[in-house]
Amino acid sequence: MSRGEVLAGTFLNLGSSLTAEIIALSGFDWAAVDLEHGAGGEMESLQQLQAIGRTRTAGFVRLESTNRSRVAHALDSGADGIIAPQVRSAEEAAEVVSACRYAGSRGVARYNRAWHWGARLGSLEDADGQITCCIQIERLEALEDVDAIASVDGVDVLFVGPADLSQALGIVGGADHPDLLAAAARVSDAAHRNGKAAGVLAGSVAQLQRYHELGFTFLGCSADSAFLMSQAREVSVGIRAFTRT
View 1 (spheres, rainbow, N blue to C red):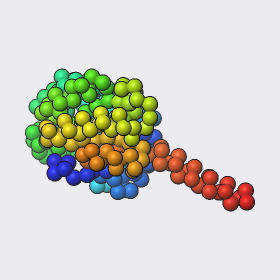
View 2 (cartoon, rainbow, N blue to C red):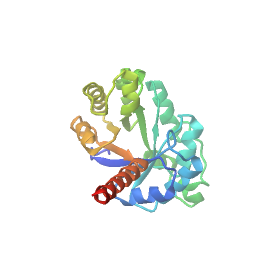
View 3 (cartoon, rainbow, N blue to C red):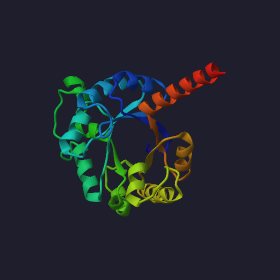
């Protein structure tokens, strides 16, 4: 990420460790367990992170809220980073960063999965440097404060949530709507001015290409549930097509 490389990922909202493992083995750089909109809770999140941990894919958690204890649970469960939703200001972003860092407000506990149940060596400073903090830009207030959010030390990614940002801006259309792309360009520009990465979640590779052209490099596409539905529909339609003839 610090080298500006493109990192491809997706979201996990089925709450299943099996689908998490399948996704992680399919070649994505990262996968995000979705606690905000997904089917599972924190125990299912832990199990999915365990499944992802068997692969080379990084495991993130999109939190259900930015409450400090929610951040701590995700990181103590072994998440490589968090995606914080509904952040509205630089002050809120700074609070999230603080919750991610032992140098901030993160409580110290080593008998958890993140520390290999006490067997992992290393300093708290090293651990802080290995956590990725993604701040979602999906509210109008966040868009207006995007430069200040991007300047917060410890924010690694400005992550656009197209659906919520469209709703906030009163835009009716998909992730490739021109007005939404213009707003996303503001986010990307702010990220690059401050040495941060710009991220996004879109529904298709074609949409992601538009965002990549705007400078986005932390690219999320679809979710495990959508992949399953898409393939299931394709097969069912294909069977119906030849049986009807």
